[in-house]
Amino acid sequence: MRLLARREHSRIELRRKIAYYAESAEELDALLVEFEQSGKLSDARFAEVRSHVMSRKFSASRIAQDLRAKGVSDEEAEQAVQSARSTDLERAREVYARKFRSPPATREERAKHMRFLQSRGFSFDIIKAVLSGPEED
Image (tube, rainbow, N blue to C red; front, top):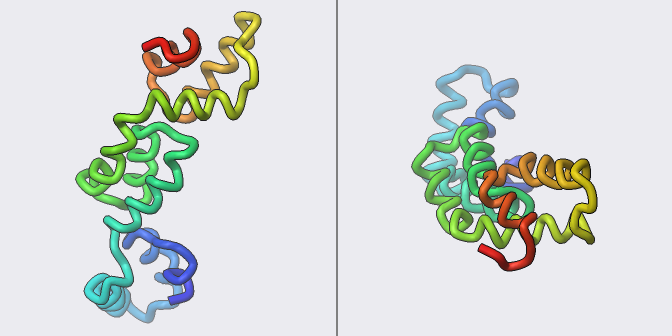
């Protein structure tokens, strides 16, 4: 219960964390089912919260990848990042503006800026739009 009180967890993530304490796999599965039925554990709620937290720094595709790595189904991951997909360009501009105060002066700086945005999961088209200048789509 302490783990769930701190933050949301996916079913697989919680299973991995408490497997050490369980006497058997059946007991562990029964506990997880009980948590899901009582509403204490929900992959959909986890996906929504996690995507909201990550949306400040990362692209929608990177968020979906992270959710899948945490054990969330593809459908729930896509539902959670659906609104983030439409705002990828705006978020990329915000992330870029927070990190870099001025546009790149040299080719090396431009490559550094591009690698930064790429590491955040933004596509090449979005990176190109961000580096081309303000509000040009």
